[in-house]
Length: 265
Image 1 (spheres, rainbow, N blue to C red):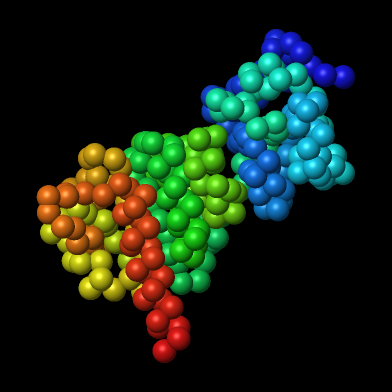
Image 2: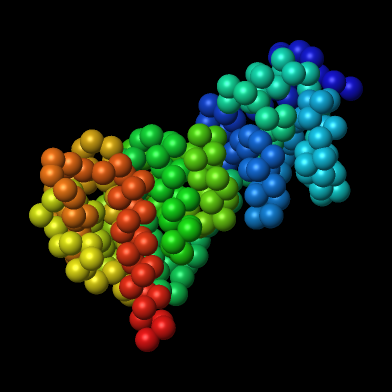
């Protein structure tokens, strides 16, 4: 049976999840994210497809996998899919799943490299930081202060699935993030636009937590003053600052370079 009414209670569940009104439930939009969630062994609750998309090989395979795992997959009309999918052009499959759990020991495993976004409010930007953190080999990510929800649908799409694999902590204050880092014997590195040590001269080996400030305001004076090290990316005038995701990428990849060099020496 194909659901054709937008007032159906199952449709309401998707729309509520898209607004972020349900704690612990995440909305996965598109075959790529659904496939990544399956690979990450995320627990699914419900999925929806259109009759046309169910005929596509990629989505049909995903549906088969979900149904073999006991997940309910409903068929909805194109107009209903437009209601349950938050994107402008629905991809044909949307799913509800449980947010991955995380323990502190996972974030700070081994020689920790934790990226902590502080007040990064743009979900796409936050997702991009999560993506680059995983790509550079970070052990975990923290969304602190007024940062966007890392499991909101926009951030999930921005992370391209990295948020489903990388250990992530959220709903934590910046002070709590710093305290957690110090408790796990991490040096706290604050990214500042000027007057810090050049990122290429700073020691980013060993266990560190990198603080990345939000768009515009950056990190508070209190956080930068309390950090073990303040680092700056050299910039040609008159450029004064970089996008938060670009800043994170440059610094975590310099940390990766230093760690790789030590391992290979």
